[in-house]
Length: 218
Image (cartoon, rainbow, N blue to C red; front, top):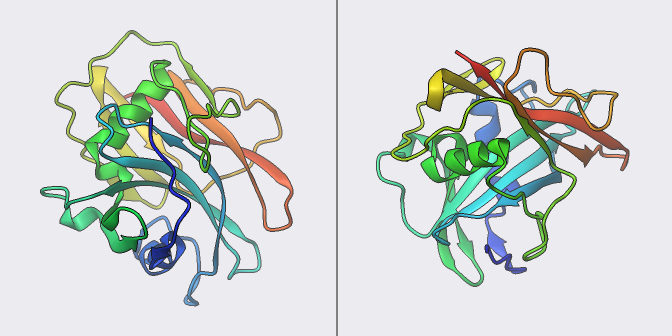
């Protein structure tokens, strides 16, 4: 079980993302610095209890139409070997000391747990409360069981988001720009083997829901 420490961070997660997001090919903002708010998300537990895993929704209000981004992050107490290119930044944590924050799509712990969530073997956890399952997370899977041993993420970013080769000849698509859907709970996208969806709030506090990730055959 991950422990959520309610303490200070310097810089904050959103401050790290303010510099990092505009470097991504799927970023939809203009030349102005993004103005970010944390709008929702959930956590996953690392079975080894070493890595913090957060699936965050961050909304940029610097443009006329706010854009909600899906930002999977991992927090580690030491650098992840070979993942310097995926480092979002470092921060000081009031309880845990220095933490290395990574784009979670490059972190094998997050990718394995996200796939386990889709398959139904992992439980989503509340974003800010210890040991509380997040029952608002919707998931589905209709394929055969797969093995995650030795998984090494090889994500590719483009304007549509992030694609990761996954076990069993599948592709995990992480939807970095969230597009609200009218139905609730969200239906599994046509042709997908599995999906994850959840709601969040827009800057006015209105509830929105979107598909966060889909799993398809390659």
